[in-house]
Amino acid sequence: MNSIISEIRKEIAINADEKTRLSGERFFKEPVKLHGLKSSASERIAKEWFAKIKEKPKNEIFRLCEELWKSGYLEESGIACIWSYNIRKQYEPTDIEVFGNWIKRHVTNWATCDTLCNHSVGTLIEMYPEKIKVLKDWAKSKNRWVKRASAVTLIIPARKGMFLEDIFEIAGILLTDRDDMVQKGYGWMLKSASQANQKEVFEFVMKNKNVMPRTSLRYAIEKMPKELKVLAMAK
Image (cartoon, rainbow, N blue to C red):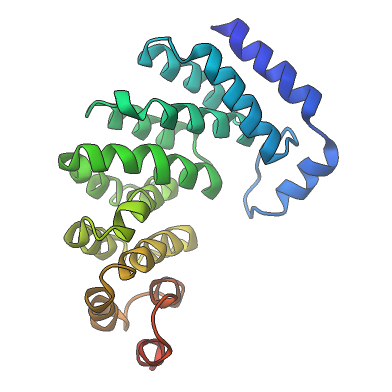
């Protein structure tokens, strides 16, 4: 296992450069650890190495992902996200605990939070809807990334019109959160839900606009017609 991770890191080092590293840092308010690998190179490495490990048992692949997450490097966590999504057909309900631990222990920025949650965690929730109760627990966390995860996990299901009542419940829990990463996360979730349920999301926004942070409100109404935006933004 360690030899696989070592070989991947050697390949990352060969393909990384300082200019890409410095450019990547500008996307984040918080400090991030970057090798300086272009996204195309990262995706190629993830794909090529997954072809070599794909026959391994799911739990072994998860352990490899864990080693990548532990490094704290954005590119390595990105590879772990790709691998965990690639084995989605093998997901079991208890895998939500694996993903939850990664978020709690290793996620330190919006990029890894959103990549893991939009794809791996969101897919698991679609497969096992009873696990949406876990997201409601995450929404009550003190960890900003766990709270953001509770919302951004539902971005893709929301676009499909799924889980609307649960989405409103999670948005309600996060409604007055002061963290801009959380505000943007649940605002994005509402915006996605508005694509299939515009009327209901608009009603939710109008009901709560006096306490909803303006950041969340702007995100939520972004896809709506101009006349609805005007009503929502009016004092």
